[in-house]
Image (tube, rainbow, N blue to C red; front, side, top):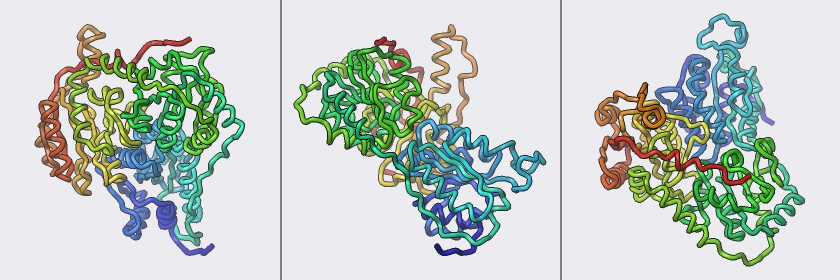
Length: 540
């Protein structure tokens, strides 16, 4: 293996490139000066997109990873710089996104001594390890490339949660003989043929099989579709599993229709999902057999022990199941499932104007367009009622419920998928968390569209206070800027839509403009989706 003299920073950047990274979201600072000098040398191979806040860099990496399914990275200074990214890092952990945090550190000899160095915090590496599946420190130049390679191996193996590397300021610039960068090879577990045989036996004899998909099934859309059709089994998706099965497929159901089907299912195949809501809220009994497919062996029986478990990547496991499944005619359940879907649609029909605005977005957004779900009145309903047609086109913060992630996450998604439109849902509360990244959007010509619902409040909080606490309102009303002037001050396009029909036209205009755009939608209090979205126990 050829050996050359490089700084740790040069070696790390070469390893990033060797492992397929072509963009890094970042905010520079003194502890990373040598890293950015190395990036300058490699600008023809890796593009830095620098942001206006560290949280923006991390959310952009998160959006890029979720939209593409491939590793994405961000680089920031230690201490407050790193801490500003931890909401995004914890969200990446929650949604199983392959994000690499590349973080500076104070001088190596001063780590842990509490001498008050610039950006020093106690045990930064321990904080990283608490928010990632793997984290390490680069202590010498010869460690840089192997540790970057190991980071990518971790990102691509088993459960794709975030990882982190830190490097002290005096190590980044130190030169030494280093080996050529290593390309990481993912490790994949072998498929257990006995488990496949047992799973096939359960599925083949099931009278009312059901499939539940989560984020771990996003790379197995074709296989899920083929298996569902072979079994005539409904497929339920909520937040992370949206788009695995095209919502137009007669077998596709949302959370509420899934709840209705759960009551009488005899075998449930759970693919890449925690299955938390059904197991913890809907219940189980002795008549129900659950088969789990998950990349993480620790997830299999975290809540309850299944009848059978298969550990590994969903796609090859499903292909093995399909190949072994007996070819047998099954009675169609399309009419039964359509009945449940119709009942759910009737129940959801009270959620207007949310449904009408979502319908307007769906009408204009191409079927491969990406919608970023934010914690806002449209977002809550979108999880139940927005039809998603393709994998990785509905991005949700999952159980982390990360208010304010939407704008920056959408920017990262658009960078990773420049070929498709990206629309972010936002409320006036969450919008201002990362709205200054409109400057980044304009500077780097990243044409996302934000649908900004402005009700002058943290609307969900305000409604809870009104309904559950006798209208004792506190800390929920907002004083907003003039959003049109705010958006235009960055050089972005500002539009306004006061009705769903107006939103159709404004969204078409914004997407055609090819520049960052914000569509303000004035709104008042909206109907409460929570009573509908949390059905009671129906088994056990």
